[in-house]
Image 1 (tube, rainbow, N blue to C red):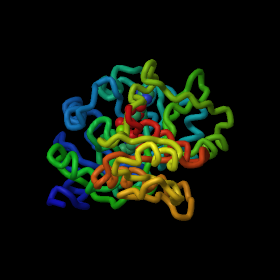
Image 2 (cartoon, rainbow, N blue to C red):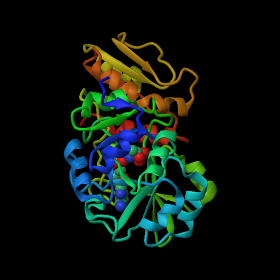
Image 3 (cartoon, protein in one colour):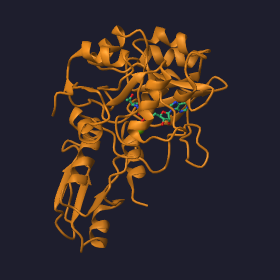
Length: 320
Ligand code: TXA
Ligand code: MG
């Protein structure tokens, strides 16, 4: 890694204050951050990521109290969720105040707000007089980064500084919750489980956006995708189908007998722990994409807890 990567908070403050881009660690994935109140700085994010302008950015705050500066109304459920889970892998979509520039929200009347749970980034946010707009720090459509090296590999030239906070502990993006007539609705499955959200707002519904009619325009069907074709299903059946190819296999806790030995195998959690699997998911996908396999075969994990978010990401990574 080069001199662009480090833990110099003052340098990060200086770069951001001058309208530059800093990659920041969070508990979910690394973000590509800029001053959220500076239109020119935020436009650089879209440019660096090759991100379409219809995909809105999440605004990162240092604490829940700052929410009222950027949201024009805060439903009771949002207040409860923020209290229970911030700092943490939860994004709240709320009616926005005018101080939030249009580029951030893609012109939507709402803004996504989140307080990330990473000590370095929280101290950075506390030292800044503005919040940080930050999407995941990957080229648009590719697998999200969970280490500083992942960011350097792909956006090294486009960022001014990479704050290295080590590997992300959660490993999948935040759960996004919006409100319709004050009722909480999950738009994106993520690091905060539905089971946990339900304990605080039992009425929560799940309505994942489709690309045909996106409430959250970023919820495009094809996302998080490796460059190699990835197929999802029963590993044995897939290995029969692709027996003439060099395969790389992504499994939850281990593989049984396959038709042909894979050239690369990634086991997400030998212990069968879904949180461990989530934390290692994107790094494993990147290793498979960089490795010797021609075709990637993957299986879903149990459809519960953070497994729902893992399966969502795997389905979006499927070759089409
Ligand atoms: O964990 C995360 O959320 C990471 C870290 C860096 O915080 N960020 C992240 O950002 O995943 P990004 O840009 O990759 O995904 C943000 C998504 C958008 O694609 C969109 O789906 C949703 O958040 N979003 C943002 N603002 C929204 C709004 N006003 N209404 C609906 N959805 C919104
Ligand atoms: Mg993203």
